[in-house]
Image 1 (cartoon, rainbow, N blue to C red):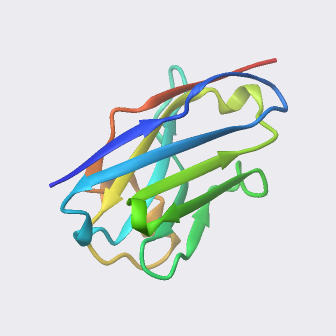
Image 2 (image 1 turned 60 degrees about the vertical axis):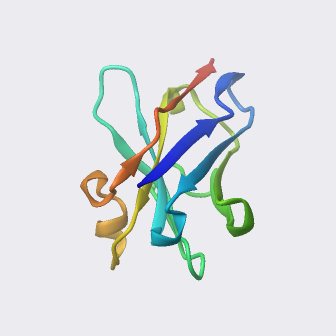
Length: 128
């Protein structure tokens, strides 16, 4: 089992920045990739970004490309999501997820069903 705990959410003005953190514990050696998803109010959960744990390849949703950056610290078993130029439409609960199995191609990384472990989520609210 892998346990994930997100932190760093909050209220920010449009155009501002936030950095989310996701600390992993437990059997972290089985992690193949980690991702960030979000669920806006009244909408379905959607892919934001993912990173391969070994090698660090990254994947982004078009809606955040150029504004958000996913990164990791292997020594701390932590993945980060730096969010710049925030917009009101970025308001959502942000979830961290971990996948233990091999994943190939963007379609795999962006699918919530590909991930085995999930955090509780952290609220991000962007005021306009």
